[in-house]
Length: 223
Image 1 (cartoon, rainbow, N blue to C red):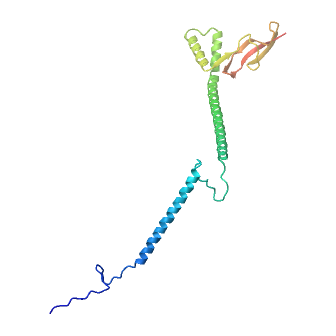
Image 2 (image 1 turned 90 degrees about the vertical axis):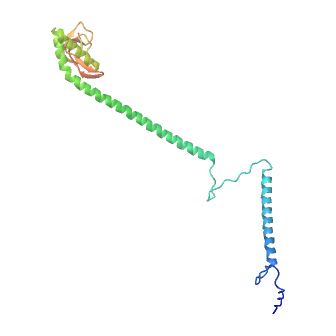
């Protein structure tokens, strides 16, 4: 038995899937028109911005954005005021540095002076302890006993003590100085015109400018 050919459905078209509905052509046209309108508006805005920039820069003046202002609306301080504030702060720091440097220099000088004084006091204490030995050497010298090896040792000792700054004073005929001489006897004489040391019982010593011991003398006053 031969099948009869099926009649073609008038609603179906070649290439279409049965059961699918056709896409409305009206909605696609609206979307295209909207996109085209947005593009045209963007081009108009770009053209306006470009023309504004060209007109602003046509006179040769650079286009500079206005400086921002604080949120509270207060004006920005000028650059000169800021420079003056920085200069004032720099001067203050410089004065502080100079004051600290001066204080340190004074402190260093004071320390060096105290160190030298302590050293001089220690040396003076040692030399003062040796003065009785020097007195014995002076008496032996007066009696002519400083001869031979003993005399050589005495001279070496005197030279070594002199290297530490020890100096001797008090000779017959020296003017009397109450700050350096201790007068144990007084007499008058027509041979002097001022108070004079006419006899030295014990010589004096000093260390630099420091007096270790005054000289013991007899003084003659003018008549």
